[in-house]
Image (cartoon, rainbow, N blue to C red; front, side, top):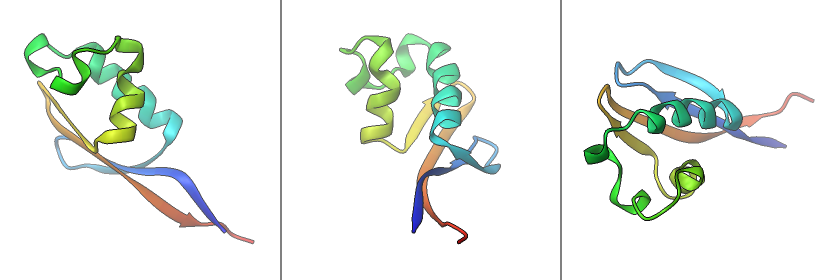
Length: 81
């Protein structure tokens, strides 16, 4: 009855957009690839970068970058019948 692979993503400018999990992964990957060492979250520092996105999606809903804070929240959208 519900689709759970949709997220609301808020950019640092507080622009809200609905994205799929694949789109969110791409956006987060672009951001973590450019993170300076001092902004890498402590819980990611011991992991290979290939696991960072999985860890962020499983345990967090924010990412601080040089641009500002990115936030994401899963939303349940009702499917049309």
